[in-house]
Image (cartoon, rainbow, N blue to C red):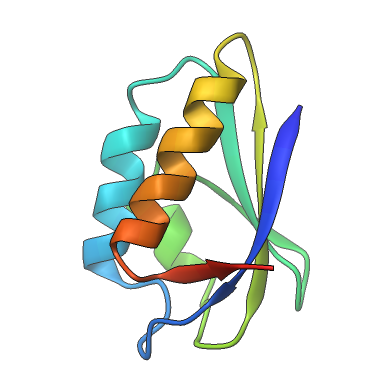
Length: 92
């Protein structure tokens, strides 16, 4: 299991565009990719746009991305990078 914590910096939170980017990258990996909203412990499947948007994650919310599986190292780096590239998060 690998994980990282971050704070949402996008003014809208997790919305369709960054959610779609996360799902696109996550779908390349066999590992399980979960995104946990630390404010309420809700967990979403990182491979589902609907799941990600249903978190209701807003600006300044903190989250943890948890990746488990055979390709977790590569998956962690790519998911983290797509979130940073989309200016969705800052690492904490």
